[in-house]
Length: 166
Image 1 (spheres, rainbow, N blue to C red):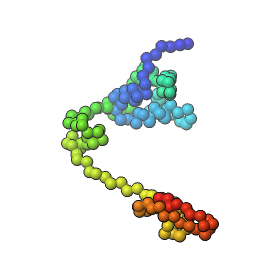
Image 2: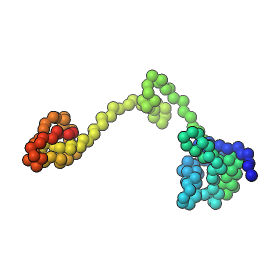
Image 3: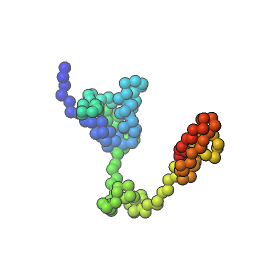
C-alpha cells in the first residue's frame, strides 16, 4: 500500500527536534545512531525515531523523515520526560568587515573585534639520508637545516653516490 507523507530532511529533523526538545541529546548523533543497520538503536524512554525513505540526489541517498513521525516522537518524549526546554537562538549583532576573509573577522564573547596574533608554525622534516651519521638511509627528525646538495659515497653501495634528501 502506498501512502503519501510529508517528509523532511535529516538536517530539518535535527533542527526541529532541537527547537522543540532542546539539548536533551545530541540530535545529529541520535539520528545517525538510529540509521545504522547494525548495533542497538538509541531511544528516549523507549521511543525511537527512524527514517521513512531515502531521496536520491544524484550522488548520495540521504534519509528522509516523516513529519508526522517526528511530531509524534516529540509529543511522546515531552509526555514522559520532565525538564525539556526548547532550544533558543541567540543571535549577535557584529560589525563584519567585508574586505577581510571570514577567518580574520574574529570577535570575543561580547562582540568586540579581536586582533589576530600571527602564528609561526614549525614543521619537522624527516631526513632520509643524514650526512652526519655516516650511514646511508639513516633517519633523523627535527632537522631544520637548509637542504644541501651534498652527495655521500658509501663502500656498501659499491662507490655509488646518493643524493641527500631533506
